[in-house]
Image (tube, rainbow, N blue to C red):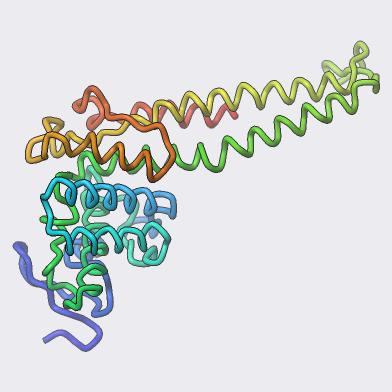
Length: 286
């Protein structure tokens, strides 16, 4: 018998004890025990993004009649609480884990499912009336959710945090360039005095660097705004309603304010992270 601090969950893989008050379930607990590698956890922007994907999926499944209205609404409300950061401490899987992020996708599914179950008066870990796979993950796979979450989190951070900061700094440097324009100083090359230069010209160079950096960030944002959602397990979209991915991405665009689109090649989008590698290079140059 489990102790009072633990509950016993049963699934297709057998029985497992889970902390009694945890909102995650057996799948997450197994991953937590299997991958005690770095003690690093996925961050706030990632958790927010996966919550947004689960919420958008629930909205669309409701519209398509794929999930009962009360269950869909419970998932929508629970996802909102995840988006707002109320359950960040329940995302316990190490960043180094099974391929395709299956464990983290299930971590999100189980947390949202259990929060929804609790809101409907059910028992944590019961998987009823809200099932983590059949309801929260409906129309999705770890293989399209996880890369889409990475893109969404990075794109949101670039748009909402980085680009406004770059623009503000660029504007400040241009203002200083004008302010310092009448100041003439000796330029320096090879660790010695060279020819005259205006201090304002130096600051104009700094501003130009920021302008190019901002354009690089815009390029990265455009590539990251293309999502893999709709490919499900292997890129074919099997098991998904034909309108699901298009509607989910439209809903996500409304939720995030990002100009999102679905990839035209799901096989490429789910087997590579080229856009992430490219974005990393662009950001390093800034």
